[in-house]
Amino acid sequence: MLLKIPRYLKKGDTIGLICPAGFMPAENTTRCIETLEKWGYQVKHGKTVGHQAHYFSGSDEERLNDLQQMLDDETVHAILCARGGYGCSRIIDQVDWKAFRKNPKWIIGFSDVTVFHNHLYQQLKTASIHGPMAGAFLKAAGENAYLLTLKQALQGKKIRYKTDPHPLNKTGKATGPLLGGNLSMLAHIIGTPSFPVTKNSILFLEDIGEYLYNIDRMLLQLDRADKLKDLSGLIIGGFTDCKDTTIAFGKTVHEIIQSRVSNYNFPVAYGFPVSHEKENVALKTGTVHELGVTKKGVFLKEI
Image (cartoon, rainbow, N blue to C red; front, side, top):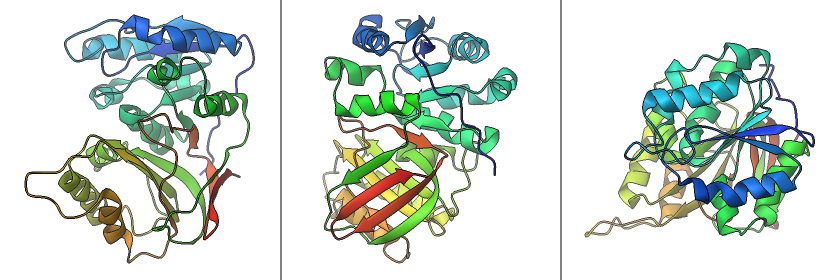
């Protein structure tokens, strides 16, 4: 498959800021906008930023129209989703990708935006950026090392990360397109046109606020759907704020994952900095990467 790589950004380019899912107060995007402008970009506000319709940042129609306008606007060179939440899958099937196919641009975000990333790869053969959203700029008071990885990705610098060894890591090397994102969203889109072909890919997973038994159930869903057995490699990011039931499930998150993939031969890297927390580096989804898991540590690099 010939993957389309959107044009990397240069100073003066415009980033569109939208809320395609959950509501975010406009003031929570101020720090993000200031930092993007400091990096040399202009920012165009979508109508959904600061707009609210109960849980969402607007009705399905309003959120769809906001996304569509940014996709079709030739003066917008990338689209940053201000936050996730829930709602991208409610509008994905109504998006008109005609202009985007002719002029692909980077779509950036994580969590619920996992739906967009995987749809872009599977249906449009286009790379995107799984990375920090507006809330990360607010928490960081502007910049930190993790946010700067987004700047580097937008500039076209090759991805290369190293992490410390983890006692549960399974050593080995893997090469393939980098796919994945939020586990809940991946389980949600199984059986839809948005779910990617995972065979020979490097899959990365993260999640937040889930019950342990539900993490087990979602991994089981992926496994029963044959989405794990033919992976080239697996990267486990942060699973934060996990909850247990009154009667304990009996395993930690990592133990749940390990028991599900222990019979497969691909390398597995735990503790990678992709999460709902500060430790969330930018990843170019769809592009080919090499994963190396050794006793000394882990490296992930874009080829």
